[in-house]
Amino acid sequence: MPQVIAVLDFGSQLTQVIARRIRECEVYSRIYHFSTPASKLRDDGVAGIILSGGPQSVYSANAPHPDPEIFRLGVPMLGICYGVQLMGHFLGGKVAHSKAREYGHGVLTVRRPGRLFKGLARKVRVWNSHGDKITRLPPGFRAIGVTENSPFAAVEDARRGFYGIQFHPEVFHTERGVDMIRNFLLGVCGVKAEWTAKDFIGHAVDGIRAQVGKGRVLLGLSGGVDSSVAAALLHKAIGRQLTCVFVDNGLLRKGERELVEKLYGDHFNIDLRVVDASRLFLRRLKGVTDPEQKRKIIGRTFVEVFERSLKSIGKAEFLGQGTLYPDVIESVSIGGNPASLIKTHHNVGGLPERMKLKLIEPLRELFKDEVRRVGAALGLPREVVWRQPFPGPGLGVRMMGDITAERLEILRNADAVLQEEMMRTGYYYKVWQSFCVFLPVRTVGVFGDERTYDYVIALRIVESTDAMTADWAKLPHEVIQRVSSRITNEVRGVGRVVYDVSSKPPATIEWE
Ligand code: XMP
Image (cartoon, rainbow, N blue to C red; front, side, top):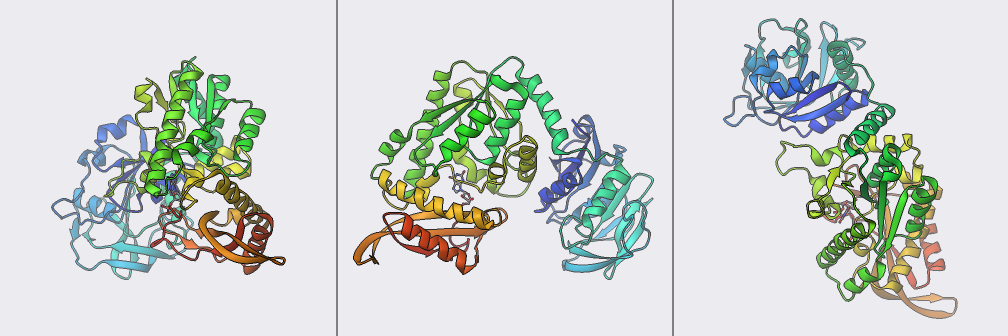
């Protein structure tokens, strides 16, 4: 593994952002719980430590404190916001509790550029969000930057490689914040920028080979980005020792199964088993209209079909999964990680134990954007690497009311038109998601001289950065108009197209 920078998480919402910024500097970072013993950090060979911000005051009764030994590891350290108060508190300075938070833009005047502010202007716009303040520096420290409100906005003990800043370098509002982080990593910690997709692939391939040996790995392929990249990576490492299983649940988009067969079977020459269970799924969903019921049936049937197909494939030792880093971080933040909740459907919970399979998760160190870069470096096409998210229950949650083969055909055809236009105009890659929803409502229309009585298709096109909140996309009217007229003209059974102008919250992205 490459050298690691530890980010100690004191409960800031920005901890993951810090970790990502480090990786943008092509340096490997890992998030640790704030209470991680110093010995563990030493054993992991960390080359630098960043103390994150946090909502607490260092003086509050339940304030998160690190193992004091971390300050004696002889490793450079950067304290951000709450992190710098911790340095003040633990290293013999004085921190004043203040009720008022300093929040928003400020201007940092750099007094001594040193290693942290190397290459920066003398005045830098920064983003503040802190309550407490250092009022007396610990021995060995000096101020290197000031703001209107604080003579100790940036401090250093250059001998020990300890730096502290009261503002947030990880947010975009701080001018050249990434350069400050890079200066700390390369200039103070002395690590090399070598965490690139190519290097990751090299390490991962070695790791997979060592773990798997002559064993066999099974992987459920969904066609989404994560499982696709996991498949390509495992295949590069162990070739035909990998068998991929793709379940056709009858709720896929038009051409999806063919795409998977072509890409993995033909192009990558992966041992791919396609299990057609569409009839079973549709039989079980017959007459079910409640969204939660639908999800449960689809989830349960998936696990059942998957398990049965694994048995028929023959003996294997490992089950591959496209788990990502945000799903495995032991976050301090209350409520855990929402992203992992959304994915419950994909977790084939209990299956590895029942089938005595060991889990292999080659992407568990990566953030989503890194997965995409790795996918591209492995030769996956843009359509796969930059694919919009698609829910596990598929078209099942995009069809209100009864799910029937006839209605699925209508939805698939309408959705294919929308995707074609999104691709043609380039908007597919600019929005978060774009899809059609089938409404089991019949409305009156005219087609030629004839009166029609057909179904409604809703277009759901949203912008978002993390799916937690979303807004409807303000696409040019001509684009929507063309999609609408193509759908009503080309898709039999649709008489009306409507555009969903709800944001999340209060609406969700999917309709069910
Ligand atoms: P909602 O509808 O809750 O969706 O705003 C947020 C994001 O999650 C996706 N989604 C799912 N993904 N299994 C998944 O793997 C599911 O059951 C599921 N339900 C919603 C949705 O497409 C959106 O990106």
